[in-house]
Image (tube, rainbow, N blue to C red; front, side):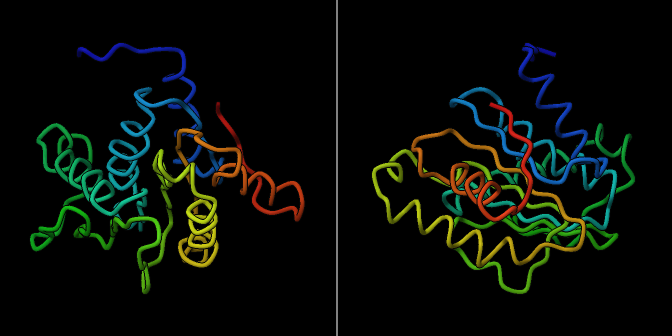
Length: 197
């Protein structure tokens, strides 16, 4: 009730609805800190999408595993609330206790990882990457390159057919993951990204 809606929230919500419907498959949201991008994309989107599709497989990544697990905890807590249960039939498995790794009764999964971390054996219908770089990474060319290498050799290879990717981040460098993905799009006709800045 206390949430104050801005025009940028409406734009983000419309794009995330297109991701959920399958109309949009690749989305980049670039915004400064404290503009609610993580609240929408990493807290609410996983719970909302798995609420609508209980067998959805989600991989959530951020610049460190602790933050990714925190996002998983928030989505899981939301799903355990009575308000969620009144709207959605999706239920968490009784033995799903971990904040960063949980499953639904209907075969859905959520897995949280830090950039650079292992996601071996996981598949994703939805890959969410939230702030893959810390502010300190912007000063390190190798850290920026490592994030891109991790993306291309790790989670990008784990996508199920028809999967969606949402990248939300603050731009700290012109050589960040957003820049690399858009460069790839232009040079080799890679994934076609819808960008909100």
